[in-house]
Amino acid sequence: MIDPVVALAVVGAAHAAFQTTVSVVVYPALAAVGRKGFAAAHEAHSRRIVALVAPLYAALLAVGGWAALADPRPLVLAAVAAHGVALLLTASVAAPTHGRLGSDGPTPALLRRLARSDLARTAAAWTGLVLSLLALG
Image 1 (cartoon, one colour):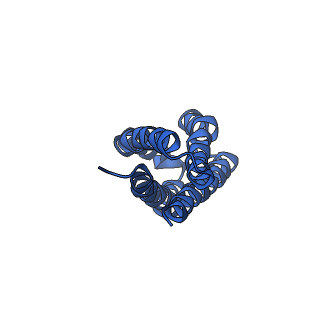
Image 2 (tube, rainbow, N blue to C red):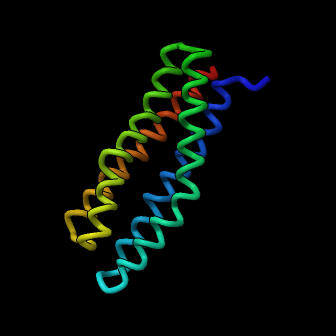
């Protein structure tokens, strides 16, 4: 049988890798497109990224819930909470900012807001991974 904290660490590693890739590669490339080609590039990004985000976030929710219920030690709960912070930032900041970028275009303020929220999401994902690894002992 798979240990829920091992599963949390595995999914957490995928989450941290995903968020790091978005922060280091995807968003800088999107910001570099420029106003002229931004609408098409942003629409393509938004359409394609769902194929990664949906299963990853579903796995985080399922495995996080399983780990929290099966092993409610403080480190495990803190790891789950850290990943939850990233998900909440996605829903409350990143997704609405993407909506505004789609309608308003790449304003400096919106691009800064997206980059800052993504840095926070990346930090939360890495925090969740480190805490789940610490919980493994």
